[in-house]
Image (cartoon, rainbow, N blue to C red; front, side):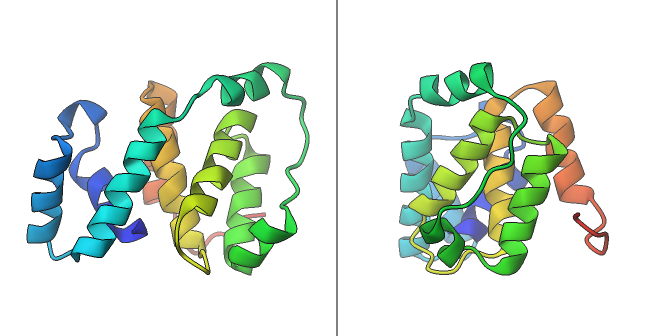
Length: 153
């Protein structure tokens, strides 16, 4: 599913350019993704579109600089590298408190038993992409084009 999300982001840098669900499914199938993976990704996106953003916005309003501790269920699904990248995004200010919670919520909604750092990166890109502002686009570019050999702490 995360590969499908990455493909969508690469193909449709702007939300305004995304076609409807059936057209997307056909394009994804033509790109070589299997039906199950396409269905899961499109369902995930639909759920994401229907999210009530008010609770996340409330987190931003009340936010104080505090580290996010992962719940044991979250920790058990994220690889060590994924946890490190999540904490890097959280502590660097790349994500607000609300976006950070959206990220972890969306990661936990996937069917993947083990979530790696690439998946965290891709879902973070989707969370920022959905935000649709200039700052989000700058962060997206940084995540996409950052040197992968640098330290994250």
